[in-house]
Image (cartoon, rainbow, N blue to C red; front, top):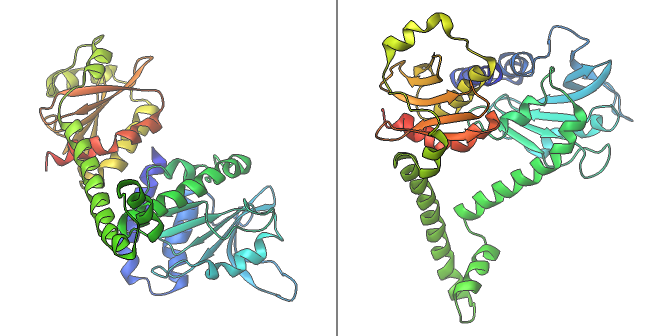
Length: 362
């Protein structure tokens, strides 16, 4: 809950100040230190937690400094190297991270330009920093799936063994996603040949490859559009039979009942879980509407998420005050469909439907 709100605040700061930041030092002060302090939760003013200009002599390299070292129990846990915002983060920018990684106790290193953060560890060879990050995070294009992984690096949740154990899957899933995106955008020869060989019965000549390069790109674009349209239609088509069955035990409340909700005020208890769920919904919907328009309203029966604090513009309802949690989502007819969930992270799986609901009020 608060973690996502802190990310959103820093994201807004990056958007507002990036154009006026001209140096690496300004990037550190305006963006990287707030990330370390407000997002990760480390005290940048306590040298036992955060050491700026960390020195660690390596061989003939004397007096070189790494921008920040995050400490725990007197040992280095995370090394951070900063570049000016706007600069691309190539692996050759991380030479000092490579040198320092194997001579300190750090298992995590970060290369950043204040907007994009690349996280590295030593999956390929012990005590040697990998050349490819296991996690990338862009404050101006936040990946909902990466937020829980980023939260594991915070001071209150830091567990290096847990981070390393998850790093392998994160690294390869991220690389596969980027490769899929690249191939769908600009199909490579192997990708084109793969599909051509399955639908074309003749010899795959150069002329055929050229033809199928165009056809594969067109098919990929149409496939993605079909997927998006399918989700939008599903979100706007009203309650599914399964969702209705799950909700039969409790009648659906009308979308607008302000008088009743206000009279319940002294009986309402807003839980930390409801607030966390609200901030997850807010982090999703903020991509289509201004986050300042997304409001919360708690009642005895459910926790409501509204646009413009208007009961006629419901985005979602969190039914968390029972053993089985439900996420309620509204279609074009404002009928609520309830989906059973076990964990709050499952809300991210309904991102497209939530964004479609918010968009219909614009």
